[in-house]
Image (tube, rainbow over the protein chains, first blue to last red):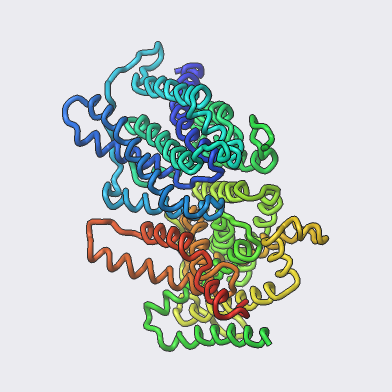
Length: 293
Length: 325
């Protein structure tokens, strides 16, 4: 296989990473943008989504597609409920103080990991892909399911985009983001918006996890990588900027795929992490963001 | 008046720890050596988080810099232990200077994320340079390299009693240094920065330089803890550079009381025994629950931040003893 086909393969793998990453990071970005808090437990919502997907899929017998569809519906709902509860029971009582919420979400991170370890166990388990299709390129065959992940992510991102920019719910969310006090003065129930956004952010992570779990196995420690990558994406894209998040997910995902194929994956992660920390230091508004209001 | 009480209290704590060596059974003697070294880490963290008000989520990198700075020089270069200890502290201080210069350009949430990411880079580096660090598996320092000859006396750090007193000496030194810093002019400037950064700047203090000094001192103390850990317990591994070791000092400090000199020790003691004890009890009560430190740490963090944000010594100070430093 020559250099060109190799590059194509790396780009495809990168696009799959980018698709999942965009969904996960969008959740983190929404929560940060609207609520102004950093959710360190975001990666654990991703993990929880994957673990629940395994649980649901293993309960449904028959065609693997049935189990997958059931997981795609149930898993985000359960994860959203967990997030909603933790927002009501913990974060609201802290009055969204940035430092306290970080400490509390770190606590949440450990609690969710323990719960997964207790009820799911330390093993890594795969979920069967809903269909088995192999698309034959002239140089190599490629999993049809991976292409489906890319398309599904594009569809989902478009839906979120439309909701945010074209509907009343999106308008209320944006109003809360821009000026909490003014939104309250216009009778927007800011607290309910916060709870909803926190749950929505977690659900996006869970959906991303259900999509990835036929490719990558579910494991109780799988949350750290998506968390760090989401941080990277959200920072490069500009904290709270949705368009930036999408562009950054594409850049990070594809370059990660290419660097990891041609060089060492650990080295790729090291360089990306250091580069991003430096972006945050020297260009806090992100590469694509505008200066904060 | 207060200074007298404060000094007596701190000397009493050190004397109590020295006396404990005679009473404690062998297992708990070992645990306390470890706790004192880790409490030094917590004190270093407290200087930055408690007194200066900067929440770092990457202090594992300073601990690990001390750990590897001391461990690798002994293992690969065969340096003498005192020299290796200095090397560890030096590595951590230089790293803290570099990180401080970069990370202090950011504030608030960005500072936490930047420190966390730099710590992650160091963690990945310990894995990447596996041929020297042996990554996850780690390096065990053989017993002959852990001997010191000083003024005609021989110290063997694999001996539990020597180890206990070595840990105590380090702990006592750092405790008194912390007390000195907190009572000094510099310490008061740090507290002023925590309370109101803009006003401190307006009063003519160089906020950046003072914060940078706090980061370097905090990093050096954390590094001293890491270096001592490597030399006393003879193990160097990349676990100590992972995120977990950035969260633990935060938890210890929160439990004992942020911005109190003795809080870090109390928090470390309580948390260590809580994790130790509860995992034993729970493992017996519900054997198939795989209970580990995760659940205990998670619950402790949430309960502390919700109901008990000042920690133990912070609450005591607020209600009963205003003079506690």
